[in-house]
Length: 467
Image (cartoon, rainbow, N blue to C red; front, side, top):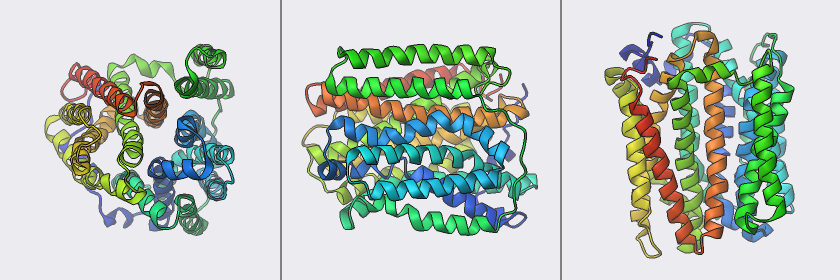
């Protein structure tokens, strides 16, 4: 397939400017951007607040893991099916319904009297986020019919999500330290209300024929949920416990059933022919490992800074500021490098930079200077930012135009799954490796090795991403 990634397309990704709204609807972009910002923010804002939540509501390591994975797990498991739902009911209606549900779940999180209620509300938040994600992008496409202005609007939308990911740990620490952890959820309410007010002015969306793969969705949720439960509870209770063994067995059976359903279904939620392309397979593996490294790293070091080093939530949040402050710069550099050398160069460079940072973090001990730790986390974030834009462009170049939306959804699902599994596995290592520091070092080694492997796989692809 001929590559469509050129210097002009890279410049289009980099051209993030207010002019994105000039030939489209700024109201549509504002409504879609606010929602995307919120669902991206909530994936990470909770991490720095975990020790305070644990002290307030009780619960051990598994409880802390479920507060993170309750959101990302459901988000990942429902995202593919949510795109079809958005098409069937109309993007505006799906987005509005998801936004209301997200706001209600956020209020329930903030008002939770116990850990069980909080985790249940986080599951609902994740379901709402899964509905909002594809609907928000569909609204942008609807509001910007011109191809050039639509490309710029999507770039603004993408940067909004990146800004939320960068702001999550810092904002979470600031809110937890100043007004309490419940406000990391309450802060969603005024933003959700503003997005709904803007949405009222957005024209109704057309309803499109789309089939929902119910059997595929059920087996996917069961497989991911059972796997996550088995890993989290195995780390807490031991992997020999009957319930843990049964959960992992259910995950294997459900995964096999999911694949069987996808093979036989006339309208599968995950078209398996996509995986016939080596570019697609490598891109998905890279996306998965990027989130393992980033989300897993933030989870581990949020706990390290507060539980092992005695930092406050605000101090811990500020420690993540250096790693997030330069994300936008790395995004722009990625677009320019990809336009000049092809997407493979920034992808490999970004993954190796992230692996180097993770390997350096293996040496962190109980008395390492906290600003040294903060500096060592910077390559992890910059490497991810350098990789993501080029990765997305290469993936979309490798699939037919009518499969671009599906391929993007599969990539996002894989990335969210990577974050969820990282929290489950790394948390199990922290709880079961003997000491916190031993578990932390094993976690960083696994993430670094994974990025080295995916960087090697990226090198097997053509320089310009054609395949």
